[in-house]
Image (cartoon, rainbow, N blue to C red):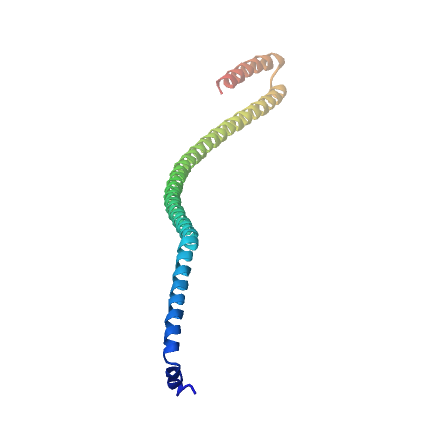
Length: 180
C-alpha cells in the first residue's frame, strides 16, 4: 500500500489540496507563535543564564590564570630562596673549613710550643736534680772525710794537735760548703 499510495492521495483531489493548504497555514502560524513565545519568554532567561555562565567561566579562568601566575611567582621565589640557601650553605662550609684550618694551625703551634717548654723544663729539672745530687754527694763525702779524719787524729795526735787540726778542717769544710 505504501508503494501505491500516490494514487490514493491523488484521489482525494482538490478537497485534500484545499485542506492541506489551510493545515499548512495553521502549522506555520503555530510554529511562528511557538518561535515568538520562545524568543519572548525563554530567550531572555537563556541569554542571562549563558551570559552569567560565560562570566563565571571567564572569572574562573582569570582566577586560575592569576593563581597560576602567583604559583609561578612563588615557585620562582622558592627557586631563588633555594639558590640563596645553597650559596649560604657553601659560604658557611667554606668559612668552617677556613676556621678549622686556622684552629688546626694554632693548635699545632701551641702543641709544639708546649712540647718545647716541657723539654726545656725537663732539662732544667734534670740539671737541678744533678746539681742537688752532687751537693748531697759532696756533703756526705765531707761528713765521711771529717769522721775519718777525726778517727785518725784521735789515734795519732795529741789533744792539742787534734783541736788545732779539727778547727782548721772545720773552717775549710765550711768554706767549701759555702762555695759549692
